[in-house]
Length: 571
Figure 1 (cartoon, one colour):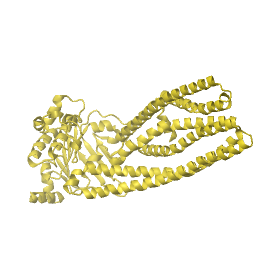
Figure 2 (figure 1 turned 180 degrees about the vertical axis):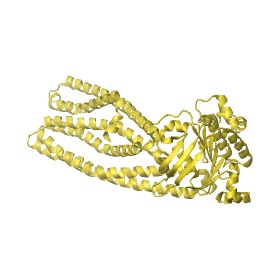
Figure 3 (figure 1 turned 90 degrees about the vertical axis):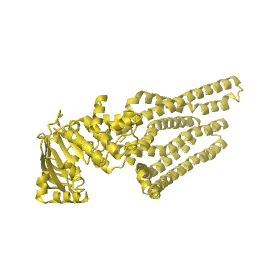
Figure 4 (figure 1 turned 135 degrees about the vertical axis):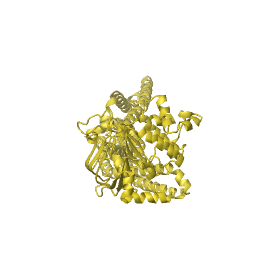
């Protein structure tokens, strides 16, 4: 873990070295005050050397001015180094998240991922900046003060420093407990963020069902977990700080008693004793800094561990030797394909089917039968458990993911639109498309006229998840993206489910036109929309029960005929 953490310092070596040099000089500057104090008390004041008193006082002032500038550099440039490291970690995490498979997002809530990218990385940034500084400044200050105190009185210095091993012992004893407590605190914060993200995203549903109290109760559960977790963390911190503060207080008692005895016995003079007392404070200050640093250290370490948990997740990868596919003809073959989202139960059981080039192939059947799963396996959103999927006779595992997905257009039931303009959302289908191509795609999706009726036209901001659009408008906008992409393979997963009858007819006509010459897989609940499909497969419980065209399936008097009659009766 340390090696991975240190790797983020490499791009900032120059600033890091300067920051550490500044920290070193700041640590050295702190010892000048007791040195000058001792010199004044021992020599200058007794000998009435007022000129040197002024010179040394001026020298000390210049040292403090230098320390002021050095502290400014440390605070400004040091923090900027930490921020840049944080930005790089956030960039790495985002790029890694983009490469993770669907399954990762099935198992992880958005709010918890956001917590790792914001709160955790902020604490890592603080550790990256303050960690080396605190260790260097404090370490050097302790070493210098030890050497200087030893020059005053070695025996008294050794007596004081006996307390250091005791301090280290208690710190190491409580470190593991602190680490566990702070990790639990991190998890509780992530839980709050997840609950908050869920509640805010679903605020319209909450209002529609008048369930604000329920959401408040759910949020409060996480909030109380956070309080409990922080209670444990601060309990451990309280034990640590109180014990270490007690030990540092012992320093003053030792200096007072031992120093007084040494002064009484004539082993140290009053000036040296006064300088020793001042120098002990120079020693205690970095010790206190290290004690206070422990909380920041635990926050940063637990944050970095959670960062690594994400970074260690295995990303989607192309198989060794996978080839780039320029353009698909569109023939799709499933050979004895099985798939399960977990090891206990398969969603698909030994599916075999052939979809010819340019064919419209419909998947129908009860919800949960495996229709959408089949659609997800073609672009390799999930890897098959067994069997093969071929496109144009080539195993999709031997094709790069990028080129595979570039050749497949998908319109899903759950529409996601970005918080951007209408133009930007359509352009997502083809980022380098011209304005003319965007308008043509919108026209073919039957949404151009509506867009032109808006005050800002294609520059209209649609809000988060397209909140300012109706369900049908969002669906048509997503269809426009696929028109623009113009892929050889289309997957329409309940693509017209959110449309009214009139709009559905218009969109269906556009989709029929788009499907010409392309392989189209249609998942449909309304059987009226797939009557003209070249082939229809009835899927239930992960198996193909029936397959044929509309007339053939009706004649068989099986599940398809039952579903069709049921819908006809409802209509």
